Image 1 (cartoon, helix red, strand yellow):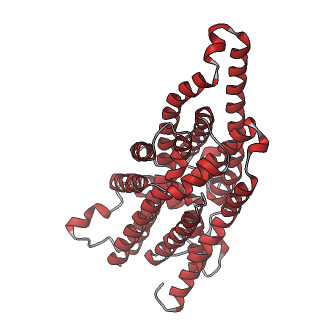
Image 2 (cartoon, helix red, strand yellow; image 1 turned 135 degrees about the vertical axis):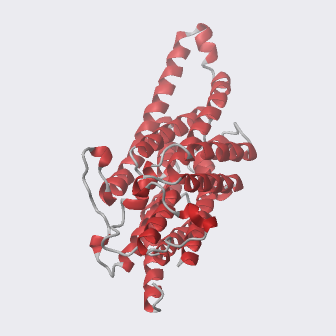
Image 3 (cartoon, helix red, strand yellow; image 1 turned 180 degrees about the vertical axis):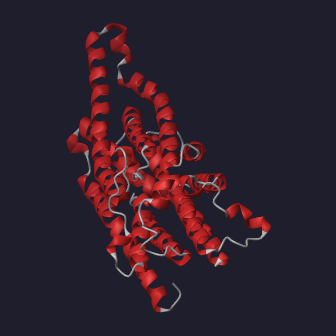
Length: 372
């Protein structure tokens, strides 16, 4: 059992590494597309800001570890968690190969739900659909923490992208109409120069926001595995060199070693880059200039930081993709490449059922062999 627990942790860190290079595009696609930074510079900045963001809170990790699957209904074994992670990894690699910016968050959530459902022999009560607390921030379950943000965050990303881009365009237009020195600095050359510098800050903000949300999801999976191992007695007689595996703060805290490990592994994955998806986000949907990249990154990062505060595992992919769409719509609706957007949306729709289906099938296979 201890070997299986260590295998869970290793698999979770593999998922985190893949999440890093799969979702690197979310942080840096726009800053690369606008040529404000070279790909290497952008990846290194994203890795550093992801690392910093990963240490900013654990609310999302707690949602993953205790807010989706009811441990009183289903026995969350190491085998179940490995199958959940494998479902997410498989879908991530498949969409990365196709260059589609699908959601690692939803791949993981789908894997957890599919594996949990199979382990509970199709008992839908194994999934926590809605659990209302004292306030909206305390509400938990798939409805509050997955369904609501899955719908609202893309809409918010699009609208915020339209609003910020529209506001910047209106500001530049009014400066141009004013004439004089305001008119001079509102010319395209000056606008590109100013927002070329500003976009470095917005890309850093985006990398930080990515770390605050995405790194925490794997922290939650490892914590979930440790809680299950503690309940089953696996951690009762650990050798001294593995004593750190005991959850120090119970289900209310995520241990520091988990936070540090996930932060470092995600940063390493980010440093590997995800060039296939960068090409789709940064070049195929719409042609971007520095002012467009600044607006998209600021919009998306703001949504991610707010969601992390409330413990919502929001998709970085959805928020940045729809922010880019919103910016493009404000700029020129006809410039958007709807065929590319259609492929992206289909990847979003299929992510949870696809990753969940893979995890479900793996658990059922293990159960049929008496291994789970």
